[in-house]
Image 1 (spheres, rainbow, N blue to C red):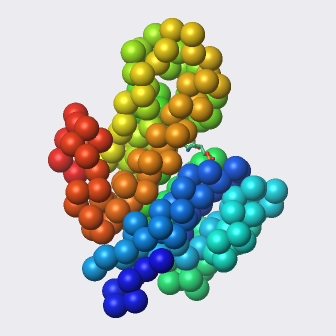
Image 2: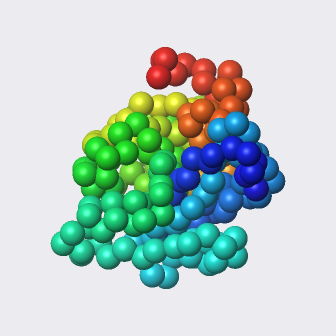
Amino acid sequence: MTDATATPLRFAVYASGRGSNFQALLQAWRLGHFDGPVALMPALLIVNKAQAKALEVAAEFGIPSAVIDNQDPALAQTQLGLLADHGIDRIALAGFLRPVPGEVVAAYSDKILNIHPGPLPQFGGHKMYGRHVHQAVLDAKVEFSGPTVHRVDEVYDRGPVIAHQAVKVQPDDSPESLAARVLVVEHELYPRALRWDWGQDPNALTPEMRAGISAS
Ligand code: GRF
């Protein structure tokens, strides 16, 4: 819960499915990890699939949610309207399988984060989501994978990386076994990345999580 004396930064989460990263953010919030002089407050869930499990997570935590229609001819305006109505200052993408409209990226320039389940830029881009990422990592026979958090710009998966945590690839890994180990680390990394990037705690990311990342 947030510190009553602080004016919280209100953030929206965008998701398309299961919502386990959304849940990890809500648990961090509930545990007080987002409290402080700059407090972070989850204030809206936006999904683009009516059957997204993330909706159940939102209901469980009492967070307002909205379902958007990918075919909406005014998709950007619809999103901007929702974000304004809920006083949203920041956005966290958590398994959102659509590009964010350019107008929204422009309105929230440098204020949108995304978590990706593999190293970027090597294992990102077109069709690189979910199992495809882990399969590509195994095909490349690299020693380490691990989630990456980056700021969102107008090009999918390209914005500046702010955090990464290495996960060792095991010789007998399948895409599923690797995904499961990476996901555990995602749930630790993403709340920390929000706290770090949005000014809540400059020490929220460890030096290891910032290793090899140029100043941003
Ligand atoms: C995560 O692996 C995340 O890195 C990627 O999409 C997946 C979403 O999973 N962007 P969940 O819906 O948060 O469980």
